[in-house]
Length: 405
Image 1: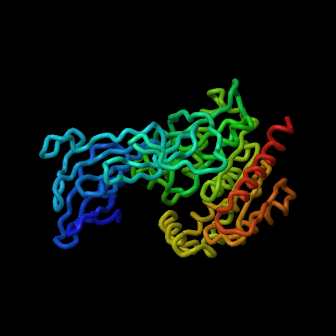
Image 2 (image 1 turned 180 degrees about the horizontal axis):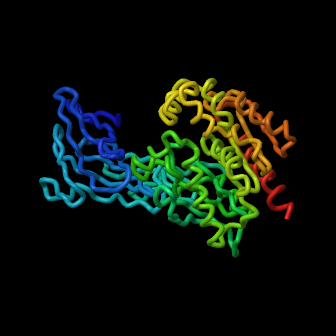
Image 3 (image 1 turned 135 degrees about the horizontal axis):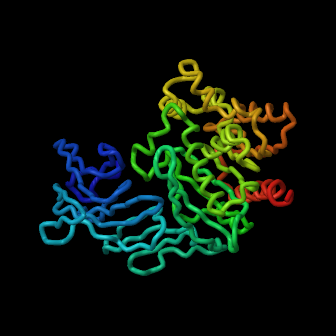
């Protein structure tokens, strides 16, 4: 649900749906039952919000790790004009017109009564700013501001399930570089051309950063997002391996100095990758991960149990072989790289006991590892704590990847 029309007496409700293999909006009148499709001819996922007078929609379009804004004319309240990007409204105006924003990612936008649009924008190189199409500075908060970073470049790699999109940032100089594969969580999420402090910190310390929008990621169509079922973790690692091979063969990455890192689902893929691809990685950094899938399932919140049953096709009792194949604990004895794990002791998503089970197995074979436990849930919202965690990861990776050379 995206909201009722902001006009008295107008019963239209703006909703999102996936009837055609992607997210897109339509109008529904709950009083009459009338549904009005909006034929918005743009690739990728489409969201929308109302203009204040209800005559148009502010369309938020996300595709291949970037986003943009459009205005979609609806006509008079109570109806809508359907058509593609080249169609025109009754008064001759185009149905769909671009709202100019810089290349990058729009994280939120709203239309003002005067027709201007205010939006939160960033790119990999530029920290977030609240901008307006009027040219005015909407918000300039006091205090310290994040420094900029380097731009991201797009890489497309042929993989076993189709072309894989990866985003690459690198420091100045010639490669090969020590390289961090920073794996996003979700799994229904995607990395984008947006400012992120952690990749910026890695680049500042001389590392290249590769972020892979593996199968399971959003922004590339529903089939790409839904591809994980029944081979959870294994499919994502196939895509990460394909991009890793490109990174080494292209001269970007030093094969002896590859770091696998991520948080939440990215932390899960990190631990799984260290066990299933033991010769590929020099260090692993896993934040709030799934480490023991069966224990995680038994202890996690109910909504995540439902997601796991959907992804794996049942419970641990019904499909034990799938849980075993997808669990990092299954492969822990094959891990060769030093492992750093950070975990919240009150985490309802990736509960602490299943992390402890994995750590005990590392301890049993005297494998080099460090564990940082902190008093929070699924990550921390305290800025000082988040900075501390980035510093701990940087120090751990430098010890094993840079100082050991």
